[in-house]
Image 1 (cartoon, rainbow, N blue to C red):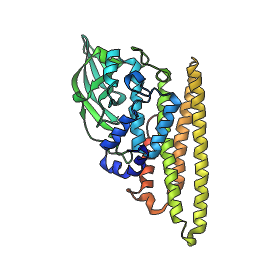
Image 2 (cartoon, rainbow, N blue to C red; image 1 turned 180 degrees about the vertical axis):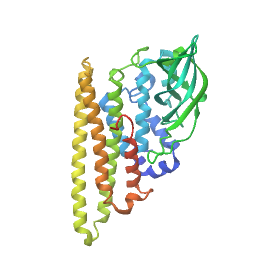
Image 3 (tube, one colour; image 1 turned 90 degrees about the horizontal axis):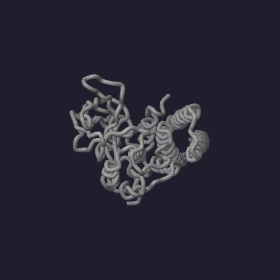
Image 4 (spheres, rainbow, N blue to C red; image 1 turned 60 degrees about the vertical axis):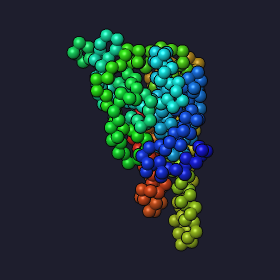
Length: 346
């Protein structure tokens, strides 16, 4: 299957509520869950900017598809923090992908050699095909809950998926709640960001995690916005046949042209700043707290501008805008849902 054909399958993907098997196969074939995985583990080992551009390109085909590629690749962030044998076991399979949550909504009871883990975690995108789940827990030691947080990796067969994702957009991302009950997690299958345990890390993995996440989700929003503006253009072209609406359509075309220009400028601003920070990071310089805050503000502002751009057009696109099965409505809902992620909201 040609990867570009995914653009024509958005409605099918949404109505199915998950990625069809042939599209998952495309992901495995093109190593799209392994963009930042070492080649020795079957990955593509991309540069940070190359990966972000893939996130945007895949999101411009379909928001669900792009989101899941982005989240699946996001699990690559944990590669250097895992015990080497565990890392190889988790990431080497062709279909390897991690789903999980960063919120510490579980408890890990400390025992000799590991932890007994219980809890549940919301919004675990890709839960219906993940091979491994990661989850954050507060450590309980000798009956006392501490402030220490430990990250655990757990095989799929030990995790219950709740099938409760009911958002207005990104309906096929299977962003379900997961639950575990008194699962044994050996010490070597736990990890903490920043603590290196193997040889498979790259400069991408040491880039500040917050900025990495913000850049990832903003790339998705830019891709979905690109898709929205393209679909809006198609609708405008279809309506140009009616001479009685010439003035109105002329105004709409002008607005569309304006929004395309604005979004292109925002995209250039984002990649320019990201490239500046990436080069600095590769040269071994730490990014300052002020720089990270500046990047965070920029990411949130651009995400808001993407929403504003879509909203400025949606009211002018007639009944297609409110028909759930229309492409423009689906893309708009996907954009709103993607931009609602905690890394991009005010």
